[in-house]
Image (cartoon, rainbow, N blue to C red):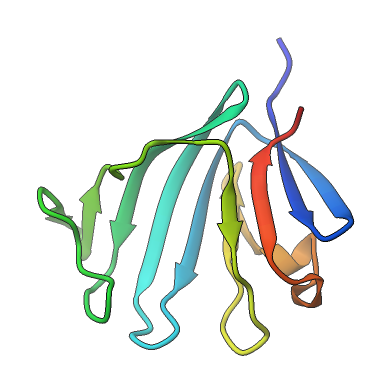
Length: 124
């Protein structure tokens, strides 16, 4: 059985990360609120399996039905099946963190922030 692979794409750069499950986290640029989303690679799709917000404000309010547990609002994203995630990255805000296999690293570990907007999608 082969392991799914996540492709990180920025401009002409593509990096393949061998994982079938990952968490993407980031900090809101104004409110400094941590947001985390969990994904599973399912064929050519990303399935959002859960999300957490560690606060609220300025567009970061937890959606209806969220449950507060261990200091975070837990919920299931409304749009669960995605072909890709498009991320705007800036050198003026903390980078997104990509977590898998028990370890978290900034996306800059694989692709520099200067690479510009970054897309995450299952590798073909």
